[in-house]
Amino acid sequence: MNASPFPTDTTAAYDVIIAGCGPTGAMLAAELRLHRARVLVLEQETEPASPVRIVSLHVRTLELMAMRGLLERLLAHGRQRPAAGLFAAIPAPAPDLDSAHAYLLGLPQPVVVDLLEAHAADLGAEVRHGAAVTGLEQDEAGVSVALDSGERLRSRYLVGCDGARSTVRRLLGVAFPGEPARTETLMGEMRLDAAPEAIAAAMAALRQTPHGVRLRPFGEGVYSVVVPAAGVSDRAAPPTIEDFRERLRAVTGTDFGAHSARWMSRFGDATRLAEQYRIGRVLLAGDAAHVHPPLGGQGLNLGVQDACNLGWKLAAQVRGWAPAALLDTYAAERRPVAADVLDNTRAQAALSADEAGARAMRRLLTELIGFDAVNRHLTAKIAAIDLRYDFGEGPDLLGRRLGDLDVGGGRLYDLLRRGRGLLLDRTGKLGTGGWADRVDHVADPDAALAAPGVLLRPDGHVAWIGDDQAALDERLARWFGAPAR
Ligand SMILES: Cc1cc2nc3c(=O)[nH]c(=O)nc-3n(C[C@H](O)[C@H](O)[C@H](O)COP(=O)(O)OP(=O)(O)OC[C@H]3O[C@@H](n4cnc5c(N)ncnc54)[C@H](O)[C@@H]3O)c2cc1C
Picture (cartoon, helix red, strand yellow):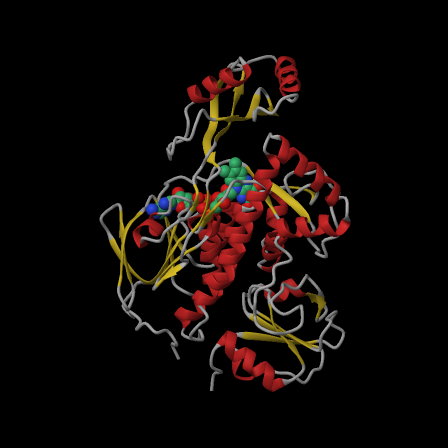
C-alpha cells in the first residue's frame, strides 16, 4: 500500500535519520516514534549544547505539549506570564485567546530540549551525540548519510533539523534567500564585579537613550548581559569575554568588571526562508528552513510546530499508508506559515527602529492596539492559534485547530496523546471503518462541538466537518490513505 513514487530500500537500518537534536529534531523524533518509525537522531555536540537563553513557549506550542502529555513537566520548570504585549513589545493587556493555555511559559531552552529528547528516547528513538552529518547522497530507494567519523548510514528519509547554518540544506543545494544580518548582538551570562547600585544607576541613565545594552541580575553577582556587537562577523564561534568587555566599554564607558561567563553567544537579525522544504527523500524543518530575529520569541515555537505537522505525515509514508500527496502537504502548509512569521518579525523590527518615521508608526500602532480586535489579532499571530491551513472550500473551522474541549467525559487533548487521527461524533452514526487502525472514534452526544461530526488530524487540525458518512470516507482517504480491507 506504499503510495510513494519512490521504491523503498528495505535494507535501510532506519526509516528516518534526523540531523540535529535541538527542539525541532527532538520533537520530530518523538512524533515519528508515536507511529513506530525507526528513528536515529544525530547530534554533533557531545554535551547538550542548546544556548542557555530563556525562551517563551506560546499558546499553540503549549497546546501541542498538552496533546502529547508533556505540558505538566514543562510547567514544573517554567514561569507563566500573561500573553500581554507580545507584538513589538507594545504595552497592551492580554486579550481573550480562547484557549485553555492562554499564557506564555518562559523557561531555559536546554530544559525544553532535554525534556523533548528524553520523551523521544522513552518512545524508542535512538539519539547519538558527538555525531555530525557531513554528507548525503540520495537515490530512488533511500539516503546514504555520511558522518564526521567516516561512518555511513542508510535510511529511507533524512530530515535536516540542524539549525540556521544547516549542513543538510547546504548539501541539498537549497537556496536560503532573504536579508542578511545587518546587526549582531552579543548575549551571555556572567559575573559583574561592579557594585549593584552602580550597575542599577548606569542602567537607569542608559535607559534615556536607545543603546541596546541590557543587564539583568540573576543574584550573587551574576547578570544576563546583552550588548550590540561592533559589526556583523559571520562567525559561528561564540564571542569571548574580552569581546563583551570591549563592547560594554565602547557603549557604556565601563565593562562593569565582567568575567567568568557561564555561556556566551551571538545572534544576528538575518531573515531567510528556504526555497524548498523537500528534495526527494530529504526534508528541512525548524531553523534549518527559516531564520528571523528573535522578536516575539517565535523560532523555537515555529520549529516544534513544523515537527508536529511533519511527524505523522512522514510516519505515514514509511509505514506505507500515506496518500500520494500527503508528504508534500508539509511544505505546502508550513512554508507560508514561516513566511508570515518572517514578515511579522520584519514589521516588529521596523517598528522598533530609532528614527522619526518608525516612532510615528509605533505611536499609531500603540493607539490601534487599544482596540481589542487588533490586540487579539496581533497576539494570536505570535501565539500561532489563528492559523488556518487551506483544505479547500468549507466552513471556517476547516483547517483550524480545535481548543481543548470537554469530550467523551474527558479532555480532547488527552485523546490525541497517541498522535492518531480522531473522529468526534455527536450523531453516534458515523464510523471510521477501514481506517480504525489509524483513526480513533469518540461518540459523544454531549461533546461541546459546533458540528455533528469533526475529523481531526494527528496535529489537532480540523480535516472535515459534517454528518455524511460518504463525505467523511472521502476525507479519511484524503488524509489517511486507503482503508484496510
Ligand atoms: C536571543 C534569542 C532568543 C530567542 N528566544 C526565543 C523564544 O523566546 N521563543 C522561541 O520560540 N524561540 C526563540 N529563539 C529562537 C530559537 O532559539 C530557535 O529558533 C531554536 O533553537 C530552533 O530550534 P532548531 O531545533 O530548529 O535548531 P537549533 O536549536 O539550532 O538546533 C540544531 C541542532 O543541530 C545540531 N547540528 C548542527 N549541525 C549538525 C550536523 N551537521 N550534524 C548533526 N547535528 C548538527 C546543533 O548542534 C543543534 O543541536 C531565540 C533565539 C535567540 C537568538
